[in-house]
Image (cartoon, rainbow, N blue to C red; front, side):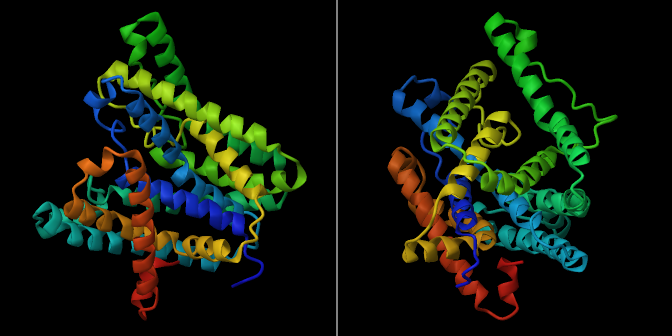
Length: 365
């Protein structure tokens, strides 16, 4: 085990991959069923409130990437190799996942349809792989961001961050604010109003452009956490307040549309999730890990998050076929524990694959 390993990053990655497993396969009752959510049962509202924390899962990955890459030396050749490898992994795991899922969903593909299902991620099959194109997008722009930070061009760095923020989180916040006003003013027009993302002059019009904000913020937070003493209580209060606001906004949107508002998928580019992710990042950065067993567990998970990410999806669907999902998701703690089990089983499979020559490259970069 390397002594210079940053255990707080392993902890963050462990939390992140667990929340991803929870979101994909551990949703407790009331998180996605409109009729149940409208039943006004307190347990259902608690489940819906709780699942909102999963919105920080993917953002934490981007933040840890930024914290690591923006604070170490840069090799352009290795970086380009990593981009190409990510692209290949996206294609290969798309094909592997579709193949594994064929007997589960009884899907049938022509060769062209199979290729299209990889190129255009198919909902409920390969759509979880959207994270890789988002990461590739960040990596393509990384050398430019890195050069600004290395040259200590603070004004230009802030300008870039603010510009990206305005065209991602800013537009989403403005839309959400209009919807809130519409809800309280009982204006049907404002309730459902969605402003354009201004595609004719928005250089960050892709859905996952918000990932750049998490990436850069992660790189900055490393220095801020070292130089400033953030009080734990303030971080916890910000985390709780943001989660409550995301929950309340989700209830409002559910009431407006008649469908359960997904506070995870639609939460990624909200200020509430950004605030939660920053809070958790700071809290974990303040934690000193001493227990050797705990160190080994989070280090093992942290080093295999990519493999877990690839494997948990087909494995999760296979488990749903075995145990059925309804009885499990009616119990909150069973949902939480089943996601933990899925994460560790996916880890076990990833560790086995890593030991196989050549094939081991499928779960690491």
